[in-house]
Structure formats: C-alpha cells, structure tokens
Length: 162
Ligand code: FES
Ligand code: FES
Image 1: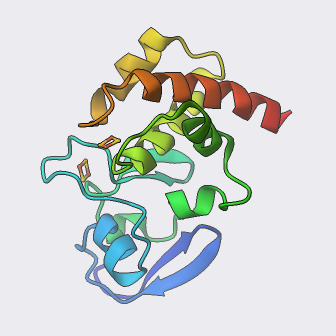
Image 2 (image 1 turned 90 degrees about the vertical axis):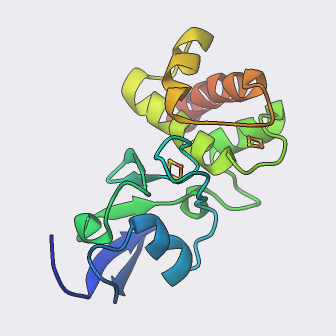
C-alpha cells in the first residue's frame, strides 16, 4: 500500500490520481474527493452495504477499504453502471419491479445483485438472494421487492450478455 499521494485509481473507466492520505477510506475518496455521491454511507459498523462498489469486478464495502489498498485497481460505482437513458439491467429491474422506496440503500443493493450474478449465475432463487443480502440493510421495503428485482435483474443480465 503506498504511503503517499497520489493514489492511482481507475473509476468508471477514467484514470484518477488522487491526493489523499493512503489511510483515507475509499468511500470518502469517492464521495468527498470525486463527488461520486451515489455511493452512500448508511452506518459506521460495516453492516449496511450502502457503500458497495465493484473493485476489479468484485463487490466491496468501500467503507472497509483504504484508498491506498485500492491503488492501481479498477472501481465501478453506481454512476458507472449505466446512464439514465441506458440503465444497467440490474438497475432497470429495480425500477421495473419497484425494488425501492426511499432509494438510500438502492446503489448498494444493485451492486450486491450484480455480485450475486458473478458468484452464482443468472438463475437466483429467492432463498439464495435473501441469504446473500445478509450484508445489506433496507429500512423501507421489507426486502420482498428487492429480492424480486435482483432475480429479474440477474435474468436480464443473461440476455444482455448473450
Ligand atoms: Fe459501509 Fe454501511 S457504510 S457498510
Ligand atoms: Fe429506503 Fe431501502 S429503500 S432504505
């Protein structure tokens, strides 16, 4: 881990050299330095998953990673998944199935859903999704529509990948 700035990060396909202490939390670099505020902070105990991002394609709670640990790595935040007129299939599924209420947990839920596809493929049972969501908290929805959205999004990703 580099002890000094700059820290080199590729974020949503763009190279950044960030001047920050290597011990800064990755989530703080994303939100405060780069203004990528779609990555949320919902707790201070590493429990809520609102801060999920993809690091080299793997979901990571960005409140648990130091910026220096991310040096040289490729990070995808919710802003990098899709555009308003061209949503990622998992984002589109959350909209179609209404897998949200206030939306605060949603970026982390979408990333968690994509991680489930990486780990388990496109055919996800509701039981598996509920189990995998152990690290993501939502205080609004009761989770039912989130689970439905992730199942639908996983299938839609298969079509999109084909
Ligand atoms: Fe990272 Fe809650 S802010 S797990
Ligand atoms: Fe509000 Fe999940 S939709 S916290």
